[in-house]
Structures are given as C-alpha cells and as structure tokens.
Length: 52
Image (cartoon, rainbow, N blue to C red; front, side):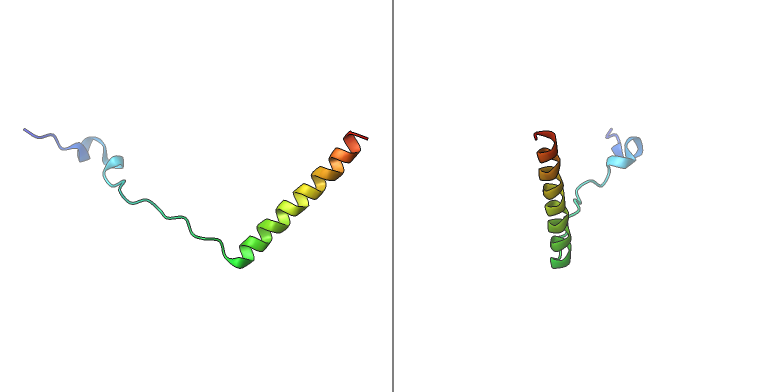
C-alpha cells in the first residue's frame, strides 16, 4: 500500500515553484549607488580620523 506523504508533510507538497527575483529598475540602481557612495565616503573619513 502506498503512503500519502501530503497528509504527513503538507508544507513540502508544492516546492517546485521558485520565485524569480525581479531586476532592479534604473531609479533603484541610482539609489543603491548613492548609498554605497555615502558609505564609502564615511568609511574614508572614519579611516582618516582613526589612522591620523
């Protein structure tokens, strides 16, 4: 007799579908670039203060 695994493990019944990540829009790329530049700038200033 075959056991029905769906009754024992209902959470694992449909895991074939994988969500595809969306590509970032142009505006989101600009915002990410600005955040990275501010972090780099702050890191350079902090490094100059620490190592001076």
